[in-house]
Image (cartoon, rainbow, N blue to C red):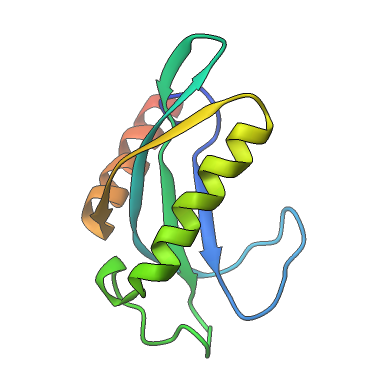
Length: 114
């Protein structure tokens, strides 16, 4: 679970669409750390970014540094717009690499063991 009490959110860059619940081997690239405000309550709601392990289109992506800055800005704008449409506010706190993203996953997994 993430800081907002919901499962961790991950955006997966891949060549083809997939269905909900589909398992896709992926390579973690990083995280957009963020806050989400809903009805006056603000909580962390980070977005992990990964690439499908067998993606031909994105095969060169090994870290967030490899992702076009324009694409990262579009991803952040998507989250802002998506939340705005639901009456929520999404604010990016920064972009960080795979190690920081992995730490968030480990922290989440440790919390799930309790």
